[in-house]
Image (cartoon, rainbow, N blue to C red; front, side):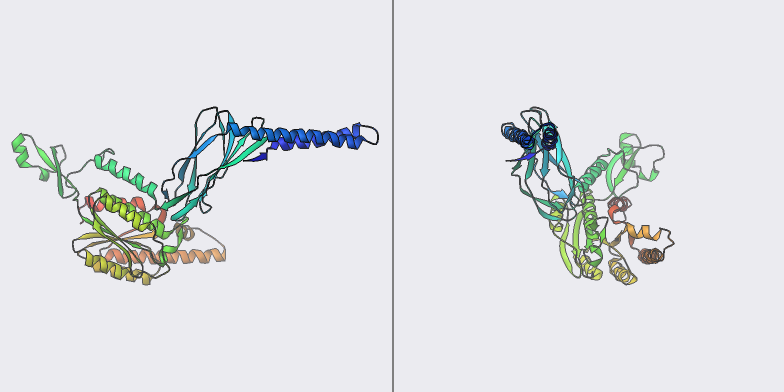
Length: 440
């Protein structure tokens, strides 16, 4: 245990020096300087002894500090970390939890005043920017002595390894939302004529379509009943995630590939929650990873584990090879979603050729992850030459994107273009809309 002087101790030592200076002027005779230094030495020695004694007393009054278990962290999120603290006497603490230096997070130390035998919970956040495993250090504790002259400094062994995954916090929130929608908690009632699969019979209401009256049930119960339909289950959703050169760019603090992975997993979760079979592939020049379509939560958990270690690469992506593999593996009509981005006409032509190959057997859906910085640059007026040139480039890029989207839509491809960090919600809503409209 180390003992660190407090500001109060330094203040007393400084005050002793000032007093010694005054005494040197107060005494008379040739020994006045020696008497002043003797007085200063005695005073400083007393202060230092009191400081050491104050720090030593902490040993019998130590606080108990524990860190709650480190769970899997979510990339790009403020992840809460919790410490539990308790002390036998009222005291003040400074805590340094040595989280990985690669993380952004709450600045250390955490300062807290504990009341005697009253447990205290301290929460701070860390913000990882890359996936992977990271070493987490010990907890350093500084506890103030009873006299306020010293900090007793010691370390609590708490070293651990923490894993950073895709956005698990967002997936949990989406799971809750989908569950509430499925049970009707959000008052989203099934509508007549929406879907193809029978759900229930209910009493006829004013405005209901007469085409959905169940005449046999009506005759049997002597009251008009209508058939309520819901979207068909056990359809097939294929997700193809690009990990090529365009996906290595940084957007809002994360790579475009990380945003694409979060979107892919969110879409897969929506598919599993609606009873569909979901498959997923990650591709660049070749198909890097392939998980065939399956249903159930176990399949979704496998997707998380398989995708987490994957990183983007500086290679051009082969859209045609990925689409061809998906078409060969899946003969049943499916919704095939490609998550990528577009920059130039060459890339869009290759993507168009790949998606066209999926028609008419499958329903292709192109998801592009836009960089909001390009939007801001394109719409920011300026009078400076360099900024005007950059704006012209940004406007040209947006124009090429719109041209590519128009060509895709003309060939029967569904298109969703949104900022990379805001893609999840519109993507899931688009999928649920496709299901409700029975487009598969």
